[in-house]
Length: 146
Image 1 (cartoon, rainbow, N blue to C red):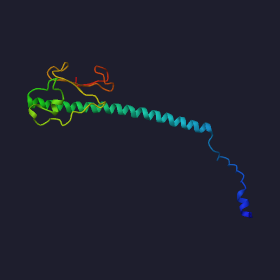
Image 2 (cartoon, rainbow, N blue to C red):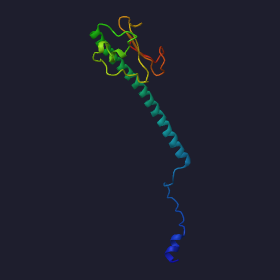
Image 3 (cartoon, rainbow, N blue to C red):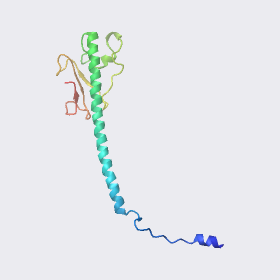
Image 4 (cartoon, rainbow, N blue to C red):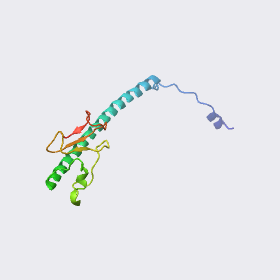
């Protein structure tokens, strides 16, 4: 072995860091990780609340669209579809006529909208509701047209 190989094979002693250049301690790293976890938790809650609000807004918009289509149905056929015909009557009107709606969407929680005509709450029109997030009718999270 020559001289250069011998000097490279020896381990160099570690240099001491200069004052002010020491690394982070484990406690400091844990504090930073805990703070980042708290921030992520707060942001996650806000995102979840926004998603829930967006679904409610979407259900409101869909119900408005149904209301417009049902009013158009009444103008064309001089009546609202009865409960048995339901919302599908907007897609398949009587006499094979042109549909008022191409599709009948489900609510944002993938449940069918509930349609009753004549309505219990709107006797001269109809009742329309989304069962909301829990999928159960007559609970606080329902979205109704009355």
